[in-house]
Length: 370
Image (cartoon, rainbow, N blue to C red; front, side, top):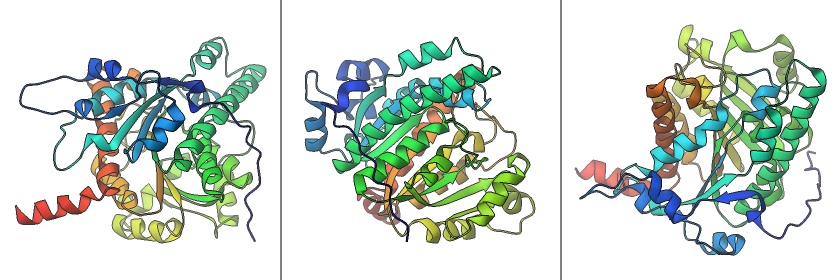
């Protein structure tokens, strides 16, 4: 029988300890006000200056809490291209300028702020991943971030909120899973829309093994990788997954979109049956979508529309416990691509909110009665 490992989490005085809060003036700076229109940035909730953050979160009526993790240390430690630290800034600017209307309501979203990883990001600038000792130091920096992400997510889920997190590298899936599991007192499941499994060996923390570490330590019960790219998955990982077939499963992009031996809709249903029986997290790696600036940018993959369908399909399940969007790297693209990454993240965030909100039923009625 599977049992969640009982980890002791040291109490902390406040969730604010490592959060750089996003106040109303910060939101106003990124919101483009226009006469006759209402933007998300004019309705989203922010942290009041001087408030006790833990108490405010508990009392806040917003169901969703948005925060960013502007780092790319886990990506660097996994031999990837840095740049994922820039996604949060791009995303919050785009989200703030989404139209507030009957289809999606910004007041359901509290913008918490961003994790303060400035010290870690400064430290990693002096490290070279080709040097073994430096790579080990990167692993240690990722572990430090893991602890903070875990703590914040635990507090949010315990307060009855649904975290929406913009990375950062996919290493942060570990803290998302662990924090949710600790809050709920049991291991959770996860679905991951990704070109890679991120189920690599336990060789020190990086962006390629967040799920394998969470699995090994007892926080991840069942795991489904949706759209794995066959060309970029090692034989060792495939063998490992095969040996764990009752708890870890996948389909590949190639068998769905190239060979056509499986259907996208059918695979959504199969994955849904596998992971939605209990609390689960929704993961989406932007390197699965073609021509989106990311740490492992691809030319071949599922479309933006299919990514949005995936978010909606799993977001509307009552057991959906968080949304984690990662690996976007706007600074690696040209000026147009930099804007598009943030805009895409905005679509994904609102798709999740619509699917997971009672407002979704009203939207269906509006559409039918139009």
